[in-house]
Amino acid sequence: MMSANPETLKIEMYPDGRLNAKNAAIYTGYSVKTLAMKRCKGDGPRFIKMGYIYYFRADLDAWIDAQGKQTSTAQQLHKRHLNIVTVGEK
Image 1 (cartoon, rainbow, N blue to C red):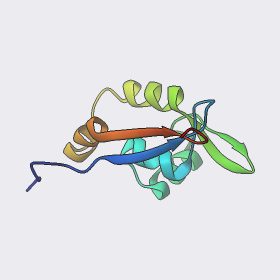
Image 2: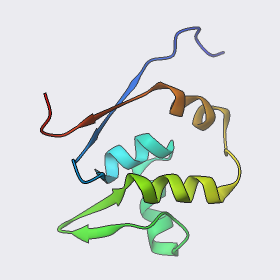
Image 3: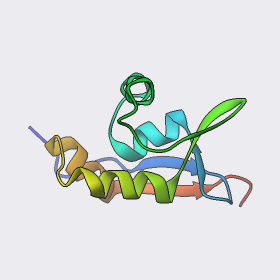
C-alpha cells in the first residue's frame, strides 16, 4: 500500500548536468546494479567514464522516453517527487 505523502528523493547533479551512478539510479528508479548490468549489455542509457561512471540528465531523459513505458508503479510515481540539487550550489 502506498503512503499518502511519498517522500521526496534528493538527487545531486553537477552544474554540467552529470549524475553519478548512485544519483542516476535514483533518477531512473533502477538500482545501481541494474544500471551496471545494462551498461554491460549495451541496452542502458548513454554514459561516460571519467574515473567514475557518469550519466547526463538529458541522456537519462532520452533513454527513459525511448523506453515508451514505465516498468513499475514505483518508477512512475518516484519521478514526481525528485528534488534535484546542483552540486556546489547553496
